[in-house]
Image: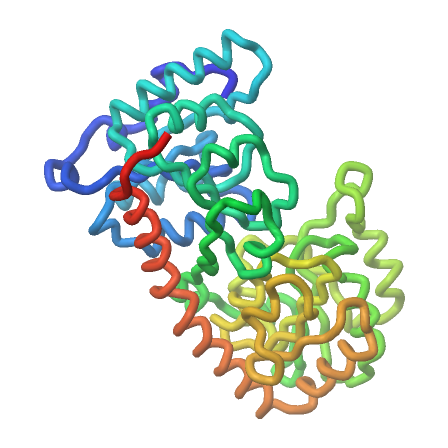
Amino acid sequence: MTEIHRAQWKPCRFMLEKPRCMEQRPVIGFVVDSAGDWGGASRVIFTLLRLMTFERMEPLIVLPRRGPIQQELEERGLRYVIRGPFTEAGSIPNYCSAYWHTLRFLRRERVRVLHVNFPSWRPAELLAAYTLRIPIIAHYHVVNDTAAPSMKLCRAAVCVSRYTAEHSRPAGLAKPVIYNSIDLDRFDAGVSLRGEFGLAPANIVVSFLGQIRDIKGVQDFIAMARRIRDTRARFLIAGECRDPEKYPGSYTVKDLESMIGTDNRIRYVDYISKPENLYHTSDIIVVPSRWPEPLGLINLEAGACRKPVVATRVGGIPEVVHDGVNGYLVAPGDVDELTRRVQELVDSPEQRRAMGAAGRLLVERDFTTKTVVEFENLLLRYASAPSVA
């Protein structure tokens, strides 16, 4: 943040009031990069915060701005503060001001561990935490192959997959693997949009969700859809089309229309704010990524909704999609293999049901309570560890 003023640290009464029963629990600071209004990484941390009971720790959530998550935090009685962006090296007065204000804030709030949900370069705020010997825990949602100088201040970086841990730097930093958690209640509450989209009960719906970019393989999804001639099949594409001038590799709506051509079975349905509804609309989910996905959250969300997945064998996806069990894995860019596997599922409702059930079982077993407890145990271990500069 360029400056920190005391007013920025008191957005609500939860900042100032501490119930007596909370005093014995260590205060864990959670620095997030959105206010619940953007980004998969913030979705992951807010899901964790939603699933944690906080019986063993007291959370203090640090938001970058006002946003929709505030209402939920207030309803749950969770303390939060509003801040600006981290203060990077530049203006010496601003940097020093941010450092000293953060130092006083962390000391006053007795923060024992600071969890940072995104990598940063060399912010004054992390230097203040390091000065106080507060353990700093980063969270790697993607591979970080160029370690920022601030990572030298961190004790560990939580990684969302083994792939992410093995390919991230710095080499000597502890990188515990804690997979993303899934909020089953949210995905169980999803509703079908078939009526809204004019889909018949007999239609077999194959869907793509995600960024409309070349690295996500949406072009392979369309090529696959055009090769499947089954008249029952319908294909939905959900996600935001962005300006390729600003976001290289993105496709516009016109680009999609050009690739789709005259095949009216393929439909772009724009960005859907509640993806759980699209999962409940679909019979098969396709994740044709061409880049090494750190984990592929869509694969887990599809499993939560009992949908089989056909995904590419890249990055951390094979850690959550078990070939032939809860879905199929194919080579990236291999449209022939992608088509064959999707066609198999289109032809077999029994296989779809079996793989969907296996996906749900996998999520229930490994990606709900288990991951939350692992995350809590990690934070508490550092909260009780001896301080080191």
